[in-house]
Length: 452
Image (cartoon, rainbow, N blue to C red; front, side):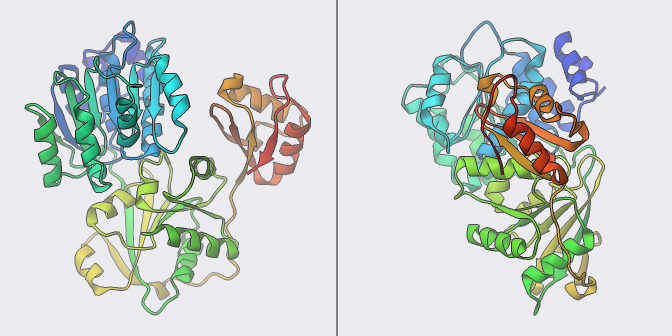
């Protein structure tokens, strides 16, 4: 019964879902999609990685009237990264139908270009509450034709203080609409929010994701031990291809990144004080394996689209167990075994987290590794040209390999944005690749290039 063909979906939708790898429904999709397609309000409790984006995405895109070039669906997300991730997944699903326009409206980027894009119209808007509200107040966004409102990761919106903006934003939305609320946790504030913005909402709870995360949870007591040295011990012992290290403050993220770099361990920090272009540089390098270690705060790391992550480290213990669950849920996905390491000094942590599945040990139980270094497999080259120059991945791949000095195996992930493109190159071939792009042309045109 978990085949998409069993739902009231068009043949084009089902065919496209199969093409992009959505062969069977996850639990959250199987339980929620029939209600979404029947226009019910839903409040869904589901963890990150459960397939919830596709659940509401398939529903709202199937019901879209493409001929009506008005905003018919609005998805609110707590962070820019999550909004971009959601928009990207929706665009893949939307390939079943031509001319569906999906627009992101997030803070941290210029207002003007967003205003220009809105003037050309959109069917679906994905954004953060503050920026969406700004457009509504300036009359650059009109929601009179809105049919579906989605609040994704609503619990994080509450944690981040967006509730007042969300409530004000609701006043711009038609009362006759479908409202879908997705949340990993279900505090009283979520129930209260549901009562204020939904009508007879059906509650759906997914206890665990379909391919349950296989996570080896290890807690190390680091009393009387240098914390950075403890982290190096862990990295040297587990030797992950990549890892996210969670800190509780922006300052600590920056300081730890510098300490690791001084120890010849490649690391970048990610937090709310970075400019949008800096965040994009960091995220792109981490996702294309040009950066081995990402050190992040919870807010900055929310919504990261990292499919394979072997290790998560709680350098600082989180303030709540819900945040702990969010953090470690980034590893051990899609059947792979992940490792979650947490540092602690306070005996209260043992009392709070101890159970039969978790291992508690002393950091001295891990053997020292001399002269440990950790460098990335790839280095990123930036090309000052992108979608607006009609560049495609094949154009860039052809330009790098045209002389025969490099081949496809030397090229990693290619990311193309509006005005820039990022190319991951085998670290041992970076000079060759740079020279090829520097002296050559991409699609018959010269572009500035530089190494990130």
